[in-house]
Length: 262
Image 1 (cartoon, rainbow, N blue to C red):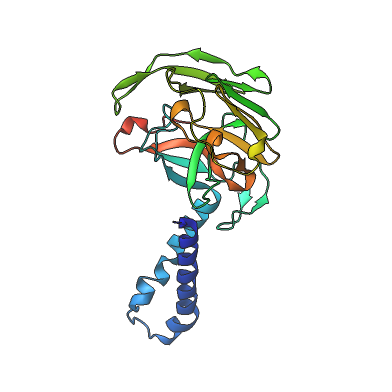
Image 2: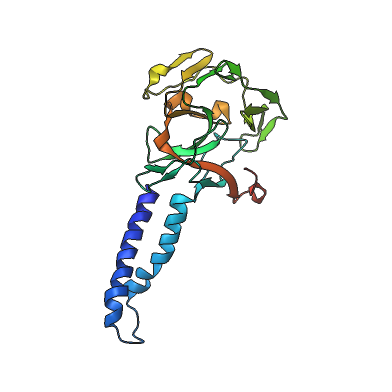
């Protein structure tokens, strides 16, 4: 469902009703006359819809975490806020950038339109920038020939699966974050799609090595062995970016999650 398009259409309809009432029908009604139903439930919502549309399109958009691919950073059921102008101002619906304000950096947690199906929004962490050589071999990440620093942390307990998973601290550029690695999970990627510029990647029994094309990004989940990401479906084009995630504002199952991610 393209919620941005639906909201835009509602805005157009309510705006048309508001203009029609404000400049035509209101003048024909006598003083104190009751507003018709279409004004009360149509035109009157125009200012509210306009504010929501502007906020969601240019400033901040809510997003719900649907899967466990970003555990332990983000949990299933987290409602997060996404900064819509971190990577530039884009036209609503068309998603065409009109003002360039920045670009993703390694370590950013980004919401983007899923390349195989742009009607879906995904969230992952930026690992590779345009031009990077990203290698994930034997469950260790290397960027441009330099191993990414990791340190062992306290194991993570998953209450849904009722098991402990090795947890590590990883540092991507200046961003330090936690990730999970299941040591007994397969090293290789079990399934790979035929994505654009697939020949930029080399797969073997140890993992994958990819050259990130210009204007694209390599994304990975923090739950490394339980994440379908760029290793499976390829690179994320710049035009698919939605915004930078920065804040957990609600979780129905755990109120302590509020404010837990920045």
